[in-house]
Length: 344
Image (cartoon, rainbow, N blue to C red; front, side, top):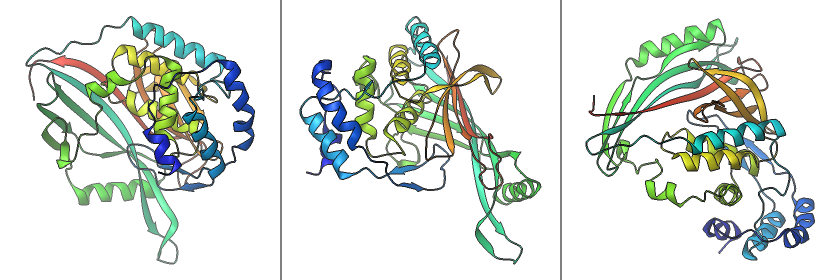
């Protein structure tokens, strides 16, 4: 069995040992981690695709630490900034007081989302050929509604508005986007599938059993996330925050786990407050994010500090990308949940 497979099969509830034991391995780990090569690829609608290469020495040492029950990666290398940690921990405290909506027999949890996706299209350059570096970019808006039954093995419904071009980074991008939208036509959909297995594929939504199985202890939860995402993304910490954002935006996370996820994010090095007044789809909150050293995209999680509710998540371009200017938002998702008595 190779080291990566061994790590992924490890349970995420290995206890954290005393600091005196952890300290003996900390120095070796930190000084043997080497920067991995980064392979960039086009960003998919749901999230950025990030690939990293970890050194054999690093994997070997981490495997040894896991195998020896020395797994305290959470907190080893610092944590979020004091300001971000305060926002996240306060949001966790407010979340604990939240009463999750109760979905009774015959009712549905309705998860409404507004999504902004980035589209990239190759265009002809001055010579008349399509060059790999000649692209235009724009943002499409799509609204979705999921109807999740009380018994999640029953039929779910997914209404999709279809993608509509709404934000353009150049005149050429607008022209191209509108031409493409006209050619493609109406892409709205009304889908039904048992257990949320849309398009004939296994459901990608977390099950109630899976959500119940995650530790509510922030350090143990973050350690488990590190093991799940090991080898993915551009860094261990960056991918952990992406994983937390992806789980939160499903709209299915119960209040106690949501609180633990906020507290786990507060333990991730490099996480900071990126915007005290971030507005998504008419809702304002505090943006908590992290910048990857080798990346030009920042992942943010937007939280309402007064209620602890997740407003949404977004991605921001830190450098110019084709026709996209530095500082532009290139994708975001907001969610709202309610309980309804019938399907559309």
